[in-house]
Amino acid sequence: MAPATRSLDTPRLHLRRPVEQDADAIISIAGDWEVARRLARVPHPYTDADARYFLNHVVPNEPTWAIVWRESRRLVGMMGLAPAPDRRSAELGYYIARDQWGRGIATEAGLAITRYAVESFGYVKLTSGYHQDNPASGRVLAKLGFTRAGTSSRPCLAEGKDKSSFEVEWVP
Image 1 (cartoon, rainbow, N blue to C red):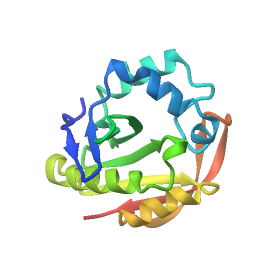
Image 2: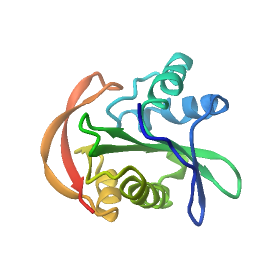
Image 3: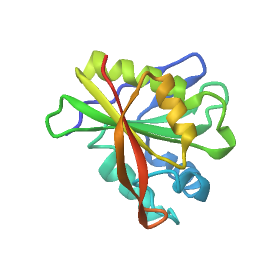
C-alpha cells in the first residue's frame, strides 16, 4: 500500500487525489496520441476501461495527484510516484494536457511533489525517465533538479515498442 496522498497547493495549481468524476478528463488527456506516445504506461487508444483501471488499481497503490488549475478548476494533468520495493525511493511520472504544454505546469507541480516526497514519505532518492524523442520532459526534470543517470530502453504502450530513453535521478 502506498503512503497517503495529501492535497497540495501551489500558486496556480491544486494537486489532489484523482476521483471517479475525473474519468472523462483523464480519458481526454491520456487519449491524445501526442500525450500517449510520450509515456511508458499509457496505451492508445485510452478507453474508459483504462481510466477505471487507473482509478481502481494505480491510484490506491501509488501516490497520485490530479493537477487542477485553481482558478478554473480544470483538470490539466496527472503526476505520481511509483514507490520502489524498498520504499526508500520512487519513480516520478506525469502527463499534461497538450493544450497546456509550455505553461510550467509540470515544473510547478513537480516542485511541490518532490518536496512532499522527501518531507512526508522520507524518500532518499527519486528517479524518472523520458523517451529520447521527448526533450521537453528532460527540460522539466532538469528544472526539478534531476540529473542524467544513464540511458535505457523504456516501453511505450501507445507505440507498442520499447524506445531509447534517458534515466534521471534526484537526491535531496
